[in-house]
Length: 406
Figure 1 (cartoon, rainbow, N blue to C red):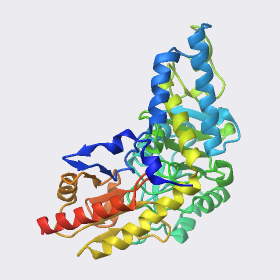
Figure 2 (figure 1 turned 45 degrees about the vertical axis):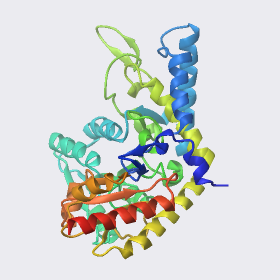
Figure 3 (figure 1 turned 135 degrees about the vertical axis):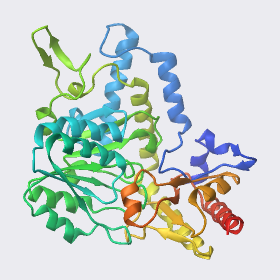
């Protein structure tokens, strides 16, 4: 049975007060909170397993190496990758996209080729491709959206017909709008046009079951800190045949099989892309977080968060001038909004005075907000440990902020 109050007891930070008020944490789109089970895993590593991996035959090193590799298997299971070697540990979504851009992109893109990106991409899936486009002569084309924040699929198909598209970069769930994109359908259309596809799963992995084989994604990336794991750890999934053909992105220890002054031979997957000492503790924390969310069950997580979003969407109808930004038919648990005449930053500050944490600003999606005629929004993003009571506190705080600002 899904018991949100029992789940909340696992998160020490949710028991604290902010400015004399109980913390209502609704900034989960930026980062999630960490359960005690993850904190315990980190402490256990540092107090009972701390050693470098692949470096020695002593007990601690062998133990750390074993746990590190077991953790990769858990990420493989999380994404349903065909092989453990298709999982590359990175610092997160941003680094994973940069890895693909600099390794696959520089190797495969040339003058006149096209990169398709959606109008709702995070900066981390825009800027690396702009850099690569400048270096290779490739051109970036944008898949447009409607005013509800939904991709125009007819326009997407038209863009694919140019015959020059080599890569499609697509966010699975928009961090700014909550829109859930039909990535499986879009991947199939891209493949039919001869293009590879990279999916940004930063907002999808924490909220729904992801199956990269079913999606047929070429690359899929996510960040651990959004799924109850530590910051600074994430993963890139790539099809083995693509990763094997890609050159290393960084050089150093552990990504080699032999080094001489004349020539270096590179290691096999996944080690070829993991130079130097990795974030061993972060990987172990990520594995503990995966165990935790899988123990709750993604069906339970999705159902609870959908109920919260529906409840919040109904409750905010009582707030005068409240405008939801992003009204796609298929949405995840993100509620972005504006109140004309009230700056989002002022709204966020007044909510913080009541212990309510939300996000304000452009959410690293400036091109998207420009398309919608906005410079900033306020955003409440819900997780499986949030409650309807917290939604009520949020709504009351927004009503109070509006009264003070207008």
